[in-house]
Image (tube, rainbow, N blue to C red; front, side, top):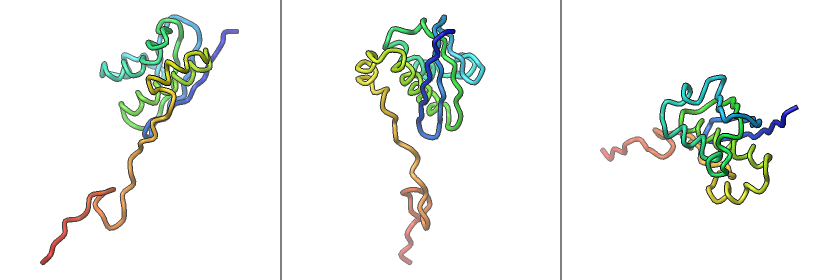
Length: 129
């Protein structure tokens, strides 16, 4: 039986469940290849960043289930999930991934709309007369 490593990642409202297993280096997202799923080259680079940093780019098959959020949030969630799975593969990757800021979850989320206002911080226009 081959080794299977799991890591979950989150960003904004996107959640990614990531599995790594030794293989040729294919990345599958929601049963589609990375080229089919992400059109933007920058999103592909974000997803592959932890693998490139740890020199494991061709060593693992990556399978991801991701839901919620948009393109950018999903890409960052997948990156976080891959980083967490790589920590299970080899704990010595931690200093490299930590220095690049990939271990900690990016906790910035959308601020809620407040009552009596137009948005989270935007107010209705004040009329003196």
